[in-house]
Length: 331
Image (tube, rainbow, N blue to C red; front, side, top):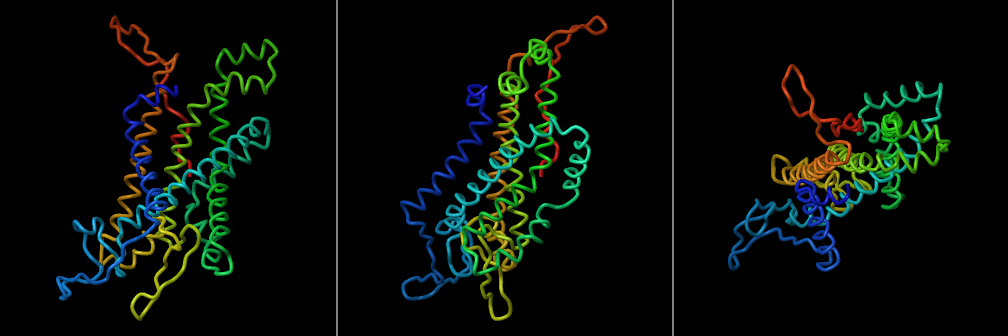
């Protein structure tokens, strides 16, 4: 399975894009000292010819904001935070959901109640729920950056655990319907041995795909929170002109750039376009990786094509398509 994934061109294309982006972000942080070029006025000789915000050009690839800060390097600087949050939150979601899903196997009569509770999260927008809970906290000055970040990550994790745990439990139930599981039970295998010896080898591919899908879900959630003014690590407010304040992120993570620059959409539309484009490009890369994992799963033993006859004609059909329960909404 692992070798098949690394040979798939879709997975490689997505992985190389994400790896290059993260590598450049860390290079900018450690080698370039996280420096973001700022210049409010462009001169030709001693004559000013233009002032910030600057449009995208050969000098400012993504343009600049009202203070003259280069948007391209802001996006590069914030990539490590945005993707880091997505990776960490998705791992914790899957880790907690895995053990919760195993516990649900023995839930018995309580299971319908738990399923009903989990399904209720389908109808509650996660971004709004987090906004109501985290909103007063992200603007509090007495709470540190990392305390706010930890609280936000844990809330993004816990809000998705009920549904993801139910999906993992259903995936395990599907695997346990196979004949080799029944044989292992008849031979006296314990539940723990059956789980780790027989179920886990078939569950791993599903968990890997689930993880990539969770990363996509967290990125979408971050983008929605950015529009609502809830930024990773906290939100501060800066003066914009003489009339009102605009939210700003204490880091350059992408949801902060998206939400902070939304007020300047009419003045400089590229300030919103490029953060949105960054989210879209990264989500597309992860979708490529998910597609690569599915294609690799189709090559597993037991998923080969067989022949059947129908009305005198021989045609090729698939024994079992590599379609997971995790393709439902996961939060």
